[in-house]
Image (cartoon, rainbow, N blue to C red):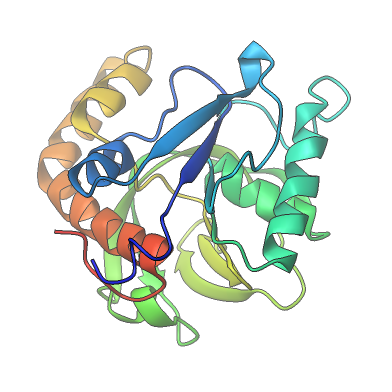
Length: 232
């Protein structure tokens, strides 16, 4: 992996709840000897770069608008702004994407609930890694809020019900959907859903998870190395 010795990578993941870890990204980082650490916000860990070169903001059940009850949300937004200003690579997943949007002045608000596998479409503005994605692909969703696009953001992919699914803003990439999913994570997340929905998601997972993992590797390659490199 050219350049890794000259510019060692250290990933810091900001985790909002025990049930939403890095998932498949952990496997990718481990396979490629990329060091990563968690900031576990529910345990009171401090919001800081702490020597990291790359930042990931994970999902969670809270809203980015809950700053009064969860003051570390404000600290995360401040860190995101500083990181993007310094062109530090930032990746946001679900809540993390909403944090990036909110940090740059966009409104985050209640909208359609999506739980399960949904089609997403690349846009004419899709760049780098998303320009190599299929025109339509399936992703795992679990959210009830969405966001307006920040000023100067470029929409990379859109959904049928929830239009803003992926965007770029400088060094930041925000994804409303969950590319980090594994079979175990999905089973854990849907265990309290109604039987018919659990069965449908289980069937869809068999069809779509392998492709989702492949796309996750492509996103990880660009996030880590700054190009459309596949981490295989």
